[in-house]
Length: 248
Image (cartoon, rainbow, N blue to C red; front, side, top):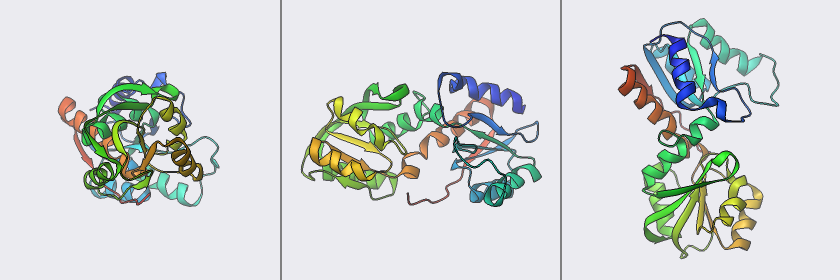
């Protein structure tokens, strides 16, 4: 598949123009013109790039790419090594941040809800990134945490009364703990995100709404996986998700 065609397709599918983000979305590093094999992952780390080289990938497709607002723009050290790996091997880097969080079917939030069996019924927060819904069956906070651990392969951070009955939840993957107050305002019993800040504990205690921190990386594996499967089904591209372990 032609690289430019793939870029146009992904940018349109994920509605890149509809988001205000703190990084460029789409093609971040230009590689060879023909794309037959894609390696997908959460973050464009050196480990993922090395795997892409080993697997003979023409492109890397990730959620966390490069060129974040406020970062030092000098190409030295780690940044030089990463970019050199891509450029020396003529590999393209495609990165979709908020557009991949938000997509109604392939996005991180949609895929996490599907994995957990939550019945989504609404959106909230800036750019409608957060999701709300009901559990298929009411469960204690402890039971919900155990289910999350089993399905995501990581023990979550649990803030709240372990015996509290959870019927309605809000969720937003990754580092969305700042949405906790907005989630509380929707009337849910629990908010699920990737990680927590110091104030998250106090919000949970004082509001009575539980919080699960299920892992930034663990909660954001699924959008890249779904997008890779979509490319396989739509264009016959060889797309493979490569897991690079991250405990955060």
